[in-house]
Amino acid sequence: MKKISAWLLVVFILTATHSTYAQKKVAPALREGAHNFTLQWISWDKPGKVQIRKKKKSTYTIKGEQRDAASKSFVTIDGTLKVTSASELIFTGTIKSLYESINAGNVCERTGTYHFLAKGARKYWRLQEMENCEGNNVVDYIDIYFN
Image (cartoon, rainbow, N blue to C red):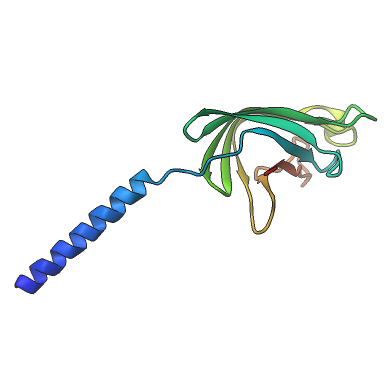
């Protein structure tokens, strides 16, 4: 009986220690400052820029754009990012995009909460809710780069 009690005590201590550690675990910091920002329809070779600023613990503001100098095409982002892990950001705010041959040349506006993920060896977080306002399986690859 003493052995069972001792084992239960050990299990209890280990569980309490793990639980306390898990509660104290903090999401990693996001580098503040300028980051590259792209929409594949515009260009991956000529990225725009976003500014990321720390608001509190794991919450940041983000604002920026990518524009095509030769056309009226653009993508903008304005809102907040919550860092949940090194590979996941939760964005709340507005993303607007325009590309002349998509969505009848009209602005696609997304307002709400969206997810950016970095998968595998990628050096960027990609918007996971990719469908353009046009529908028809047209997707936008909107990326925020680590640098």
